[in-house]
Image (cartoon, rainbow, N blue to C red; front, side):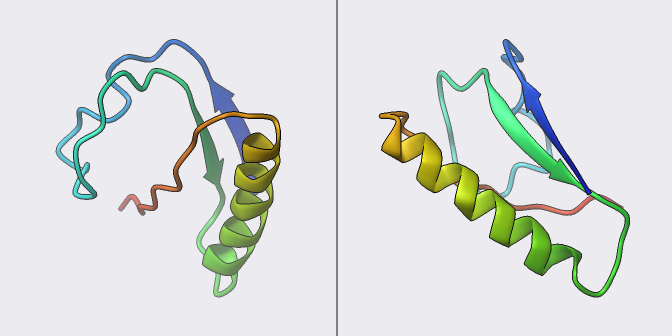
Length: 70
């Protein structure tokens, strides 16, 4: 599993895979990616929530958006 921080990507929520609603002004995001496994969703969710809580503690407004590719 890898955690990647992406900056200044204005098209990050413009793809056809964006089934989770409309976001605007979002150009930075954190991606948690890994090889398919039976516990990947659980691990990604666990570490993603830790990141969200820390960001909120630091005063950053954030959301969790989930998705799978292929």
